[in-house]
Length: 346
Image 1 (cartoon, rainbow, N blue to C red):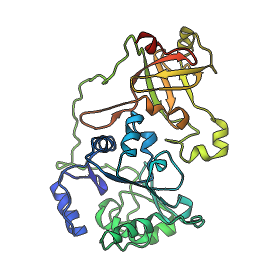
Image 2: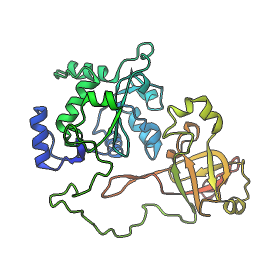
Image 3: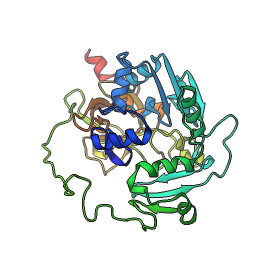
Image 4: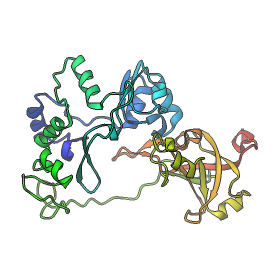
């Protein structure tokens, strides 16, 4: 839904500017979200994908359907640095470069643009991400010639007013600059919206939001709420952090956290192996007591392929933001090794 610098795809002035800058005619409608892409693939409307640095086979909700959609593609290309769950499904894997192996800029959440310099060469047959992308483009008949990070940054400066004042030389001398920095010599702004907001009037827009309920709520069969998320030691799907032996030694196995009272009510103790069941699947993992949780809540980190939390989650999309309900679905806790309550009822 966005062009660089958070310029909306639906904005005709922004589109006209990028049409001129890139010498192309861009689509006038927002594209699909990741979940919508997977759903389109499952329905046969998308036949091939090129995935770079993402792991939807672990991060997408209702994973059984997501993996089936990826496996059913006519052609899947994955550009990656490690053999992720998504890469396992690929027809072609393009071995890419990790961040210590390439020069470029990182921009963090507080808008600090930082220069990173390559410290080592990519191993084996791995190649720089930019080299791979350029090769793909040229073999598709496109005249792409940004051969290094400096050329890419020059293009970014040309189409992103917020960083137009940050030169490559300045990054080399200072290491980092905080945007917006619209003119060369500007110090950069630690506070972004000082005098006006990026609206036509310059004033902020406040929109009332009515309470809406989740697509799936607890009931007699699934009486608890599953919340998924990250933990300190493992980032996102664990593609890199679970390969870091020091981090994996601290949190080596998947766990499900419940309030101590919820554990007692179910007749479980911390360390017991339990089965967590939703309408979409079931996983087994160790129980952990956590007083920070409400008595009816369950928390599972989604970094563990051997007990993938997203096998359970709901792919229903928010009608406005288009985000899936990854953080809320109804589940049931069972003692592992016992017959499933659902199977008994059926």
